[in-house]
Image (cartoon, rainbow, N blue to C red; front, side, top):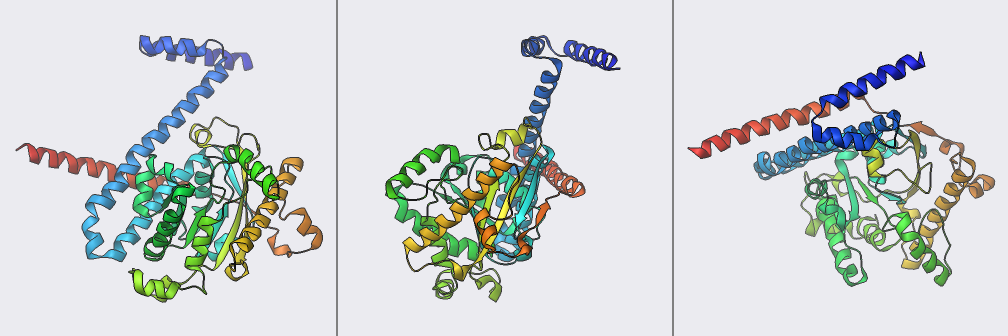
Length: 414
């Protein structure tokens, strides 16, 4: 039976080989030399998956931008709240499509710790460790099934991501791009405060996603170890010491006992003027992302091409009430944040040693610090019918926009 299957596969490959054009035939021949048929088919699968991602970008991103910046732009003036509601819906659909890339590649999300779906209506700051370019799409996959999260989320990212294919979408939605460096620190922190008031509050966003480490683990680990050794801070291996600047600005701007109400009254134009829009931050959520292989975390290329074996990625949540986060000084906030990162280190170390991700750090399990309700494990799912619906909407919109552009072009010819 195996011989028959192998012979049938070889016949199909030969048929496909002779059907392609001669230049591509030579390229395929060079690719096949040195690899067996299974490897070649795996390569073809990866190429097809990447092509599908590129095509999806071509009909999703321009369509989103045309709706927001051309067709619905007058609506932004006539009905400001309605415009941002529609933008949030389209942004959610777009991020849900991005989330399907990792889901299709069978990189499954397992959530542990506190159930974040119980506070989707509350304003939260998520502090996430940063390992690779796969962190953001995998978080999108985790958040896509939670009600009203993706449409009211704000990502804080490095400025370089502004110039990616998704940068224009993020600018439209109101994500914040931060420039690193001591020479621009004060200016960036002032811009961040203004952005929080005018966009996060002004557009009634709920969740802020921040990567305090300021870069990928592989790029910052050596610098972090040197800094920790020099200043007698904890030396970490699976995470790097976080930076506190952006976190401090967010907490000082949005905390309950600050001057948020006065700032809103003087500087912010609310969408609807409701009390809900004036609510401060309620939770700080310590979020830990754990990949199966610490040396090779799942990255964006793996997500797009499916060139890595299926696996489970763990995301652990620990929420803290905002009044438990010390804000009396920069040092106390730094120490509190370093404690959270030491807990991340402890859990990641145990996971990579035993192969089982813990519900809590071992030290807190021994001390009995937390109750049993934190011992949850949840596999994130995606609705295939919903995915088909999202793609149908964007493909239909693309055809509609092409038709409009065709009509406008013909009109301009006369």
